[in-house]
Every structure is written in structure tokens, then in C-alpha cells.
Amino acid sequence: MRLAREPVTRVGVTVTFLRMDARPFSAAPSLPQDAAVTHLRSCTVAQYRYLYDTVGADYVWWLRRTMPDHHLAHLLRDPRVSVHVLRLGGEMAGFFELDRTHWPVVNISYFGLFPSAVGRGIGYAFLRHAVDTAWAMRPRVVTVNTCTADHPRAMPTYLRAGFRPDRQVWEEWNVPVRLGLSIPDALRL
Image (cartoon, one colour):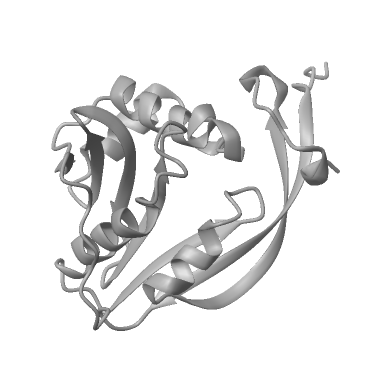
């Protein structure tokens, strides 16, 4: 008996892995006066899904959407993983996730702004806050990756912050249709 395959959209992306081997020398720009970044010490699955889905909806963020709740809850309980939320005027505006499971490397697993915050000139300052938070953990290296599905300013912003490309790989994704993601024609295979 054959199991029916789930309908998927085939997506092709180039993923660039970046690294930073030393803390930036320049001071980070200030976030807006009405901005605050908080560490969500007990991030729930529902909170995480809201952050991930809101930031990633336009950029084909799909992997964590397919992760079962109990697996995501386990990940969020890991003390080596931390979730940090940006608020503007008290409203959520973005988040980043830091992962120390491959110590002495800290990986910025996810980073992004809510659609309402994109284009307001705060992305670089927020990224530098994430970078400075990662370096405060005293790692040997800070890493991040981006892909051709991400915002077009992601790569220039990472480079401006001091990351340098380490390697690139071509990936083909089978994105489940049930997720309802809007996938740009340029990424479809």
C-alpha cells in the first residue's frame, strides 16, 4: 500500500552562510526612542509561531511551520536557544533567535521584522542589537545565513554589520501547499 504524497511547491534557492570572527569595532546605531528589545524567557509555541509566521510570511519561512508543536516546545525549552522580541511603541515589530547548541559558535537562527516595520530604517540597528547580544555570550564565532527567498536587503545588511560570506549552496525545497505561503514565481522550479 502506497501512502499519498502531500502536495508541494518545488522551490529553488541559493543559501549563503555568513560568519563573523570578531566583535564589530564600531558602535551600534541606536534603535528608535520608542523601541525595546526583550528576551522572551519562557516563549510559548503560540508566541513563537506568531513571531515566525508574521516575519517569515513574505520570505518562504516554512521549516518551523511544519515542526510539530511538541518538537518546537522542546526546542524553546533548551537553555541554549533564546528568542528576543523587538517592540516599537509597545507593539511587536520583529524578533531574532540565538542558538548556542554548537558552542563556541552562536548562530542567529532567525532574524527579521514584521511587515509593518520593514522600510522604516531600523533593520540595521536591530541586527546590530542581535549581533551585540550574541557577542555578549563570548563565543568564538557568530554565524547567520540568508537565501534568495529573503528580503533583498538582507545580504547587504549582514555585510554592513560585519559578516562575511563563508560558503554558498543550492537548495531545493518541497514546500507543503497546505501552508498557504505566497511563493514568488522566480523561486519556483
